[in-house]
Image (tube, rainbow, N blue to C red; front, side):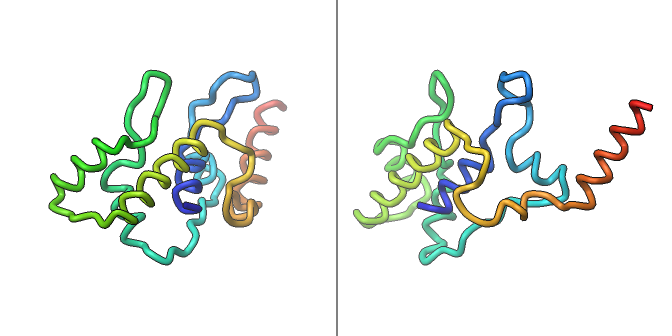
Length: 135
């Protein structure tokens, strides 16, 4: 679940300084600043792989929504994967966790040290370049 929440947070788009939705995801912002979004270790990595292959969410009218049972079942059938009931439930919960994190982005990721989201040297260089344009 934590990996799904982390992925949802990484894909989320925070508000810009004007209070409107920004144009870059948390992951894009981190990479622009010389960092990255760390992913937690997983006890069952194949389930996370399956979630990503199935698509962690489906399109809804107001943004991504969790995979329905029918969507998940159709994906498993199409991929020739015989999901165990507990795997099916985990994938559904992970999809919900992804959507929850995507829909309400926090400033800080659910996992990892926020210092990993940027490199001090890259941020300082960008700040210096921005200030030099003002002069």
